[in-house]
Image (cartoon, rainbow, N blue to C red):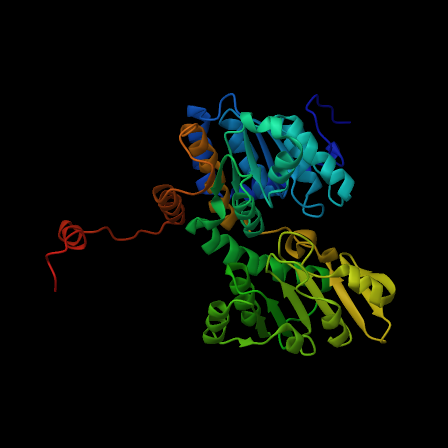
Length: 423
């Protein structure tokens, strides 16, 4: 039996050896974060900082947590989604790295919210949030702790939308780093990471052939772009639904059919929501779908598919496979839901490949360092990752990949900085 004095709530500490093995494997493709961790270990930029991270507890997140501890932070990790935790990873972080983790795959909502409050009991100086649940709870229930907060970082589109709403309502009274908008995050994590891992989750949950299927992608932001492109690459016929006219034109010119969901519903074999909004697929859409149509979500929260309406429309719900539930509707047809409507890439698969999370988590680590270095100097509200930090992450990634690029000559530098040269 594995014993530790580190505070935790994980499924089984005996899973730690497998978790350690998998964490080490992920690290093979995370050279940028590894270099940051090595520097952090020498400089200790987060010494004395109490830090809470509310993230998907995966092999990649493990490397972020390890880097933060190397930086001197007193770090505590909780799950940002009830189905995204990898229990062996959680066990290894506790047993092998002495990091407090409160996360179990499949935890119910009460347990999830209890863990959020345990995180706030840590009295954090910095919060790394996926989806802004910890920050929202802090503002609603722990106003007295805001004085101790240096700032927060957020890397999900859903979380940024919530922070913007907090800012409009005048309750965001501390700095928040918008990691989601860093070029080395959304260009790669959202597009290539979500695109690949979403299809990975669908295939693992169902073992179906994607070629020849009609896949409906709801939303054409960076996650939607990546999902649609990867689906087309697998031989699927892709329909995009959108509410933004500019993105709709972009999807059209990228070669996709663009339809309202009401018209797409009868045509789709598989539906993927990546909008960050509520009830994108509703009762009237389920009613119109083909028998056996599959629906899943790759947005952060499980609200994009109106599961309450679907349950009310069903005579029977049965589990067809792991993370695959079939709803038998009163009209005689069935609708299949993958991953309980939660993030299918993490519920049914392993999330993004480590190569893209390397850059995303490098941004998170450096955002924490930036907050500490600039304590008391940043105004309340949302702040972008500094361009020089973004480019340094890209430079380190290229270096690790063995890719060289050109540099400006002195003549070119003079030209682009002059308004008198002309043509």
